[in-house]
Length: 340
Ligand code: ADP
Ligand code: NA
Image (cartoon, rainbow, N blue to C red; front, side, top):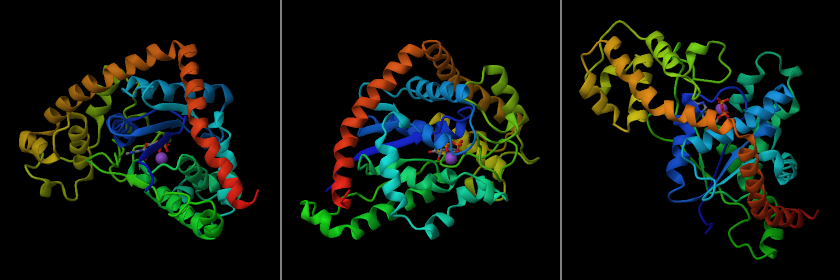
């Protein structure tokens, strides 16, 4: 009984890579056809780790440019920057008082990002998931398209929604909400690229923070860079198998097949039917051609848009006004429910 609404976000840190594109942005482009969507640049999440102010400002525009260049329509959808809608921070504080330490202690992303130096990371890095819960629930979003790595955070969002609904059930019911105040949002994680792996190491996800540039394809890469990175991608000495079974225990091969499948829209089975028995060298050439064909125009359009920061800033300002029109009444009601 909550109307369907989609929310997702990307951090303005580093270069956007193929994992962000296939795991998130491609799904956003599809969902705009069927759903009311908000696509956020989550800059408040970016400052949980140290960021240079001028680079952050540029990176915020770059994510907005990537959304638009990938085919997200800023008129039909709301594209905006998190820090321009202050209700995100306000609701995050309420959720910091709902979520339990034990829940956040179990978050694997925090453990990965904090590493061994836990005493010295920001409190914001620890509280990252409650801010993400606020991002989603501030719009009472019901569906959250994300990559596999964000599954645990969406589950935490559901726990926060549920606990808020329980803790304040009387106050919520007294205001006429019969099914709780917040929906329990569902993650949308599927397809062959829900988890794109590093091109250098099939056991690690492709990531903005990997030290090796050869580990990822960036949306901004030109044809030469794409060719080189795919040629150098780690593989094994066997030819490609003809069936999915044959990818077991071959994570690098499985990753490249998944990327080909996601970029071409052809099932992994069909990709193997076409390339099974071939050497990686010839498959890689086809994959590089495909990646250049798909990513090249997006990179070019991003560069064009980044050359017009006034246009991007206008879209973000408009988006913030439209986002706040949804967020403000919900935040006001949250305060009322809590007694603030
Ligand atoms: P990153 O993880 O690269 O720092 P974000 O945390 O901003 O980027 O994630 C933005 C979106 O991209 C999220 O939905 C996340 O799940 C998705 N994503 C990130 N890396 C990958 C990957 N390797 N494969 C699939 N999806 C990914
Ligand atoms: Na991530």
